[in-house]
Length: 271
Ligand SMILES: Nc1ncnc2c1ncn2[C@@H]1O[C@H](COP(=O)(O)OP(=O)(O)OP(=O)(O)O)[C@@H](O)[C@H]1O
Ligand SMILES: [Mg+2]
Image (cartoon, protein in one colour):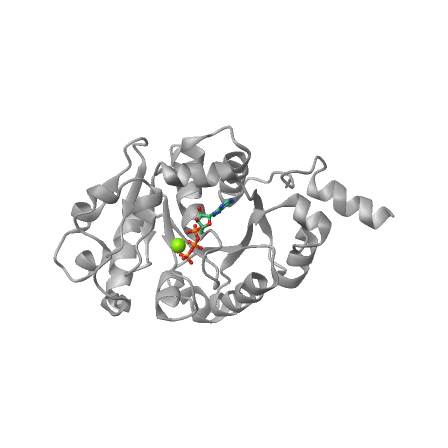
């Protein structure tokens, strides 16, 4: 049975869709069977970042409403055999997503895929709670700034109360993905430091993705950064994050700083 991961944040524009595509591709590049699911009904964005927008015929809402079977809506990635996209509808509104419909689709996807990665819409309303409902694990995407951290804290509250796992009294695994991190700005005090974010949110760190033109370039050519430029620093950070998501333990490094995050913490403690 596949693992269901929700990529969520509360605040908009922090890098959920970018991270869904990059983590999904990184896992598929390790030969895992992956489907990325766009829950952002009405806005629809993941297909663009994946470079599949011209191939969308049927979408999640069509499958939920019975207009199409799941295999008709799944789009196989042009570059990776094991990577698929289930797109969102651009024309309908989010009320077309029903709780029962989502449950049925997720249950079917779990039979065929190792990973079902759900790209959540921004906010804390119905679309976001539906996207997280069936998750086994959550990736909480956060930028190093106060408003993003505050919204992530609210999302953590929802993950611990509104998901099926929470209702069953089980723990949902939560991971922090710090994105758009700029070491120079953090050093100048224009951004929160990694330690500050961790102290406030207090969930394990999945990785730190730097603010980088490589991410924008990848998005412009319709490819996850791990495929567009696998050697780039953000791609390497996403590869490491994907390995941690799959259960490996790797030291965390802060992009733009030479020392590992642990060295830094220990140096601080020793001082
Ligand atoms: N590491 C990064 N470096 C530079 N730009 C980035 C990075 N991550 C994301 N971006 C850019 O930030 C913008 C928002 O990213 P994205 O669409 O992934 O966010 P989102 O959280 O999905 O937004 P929404 O809440 O609207 O769905 C995009 O233009 C994207 O290319
Ligand atoms: Mg998005």
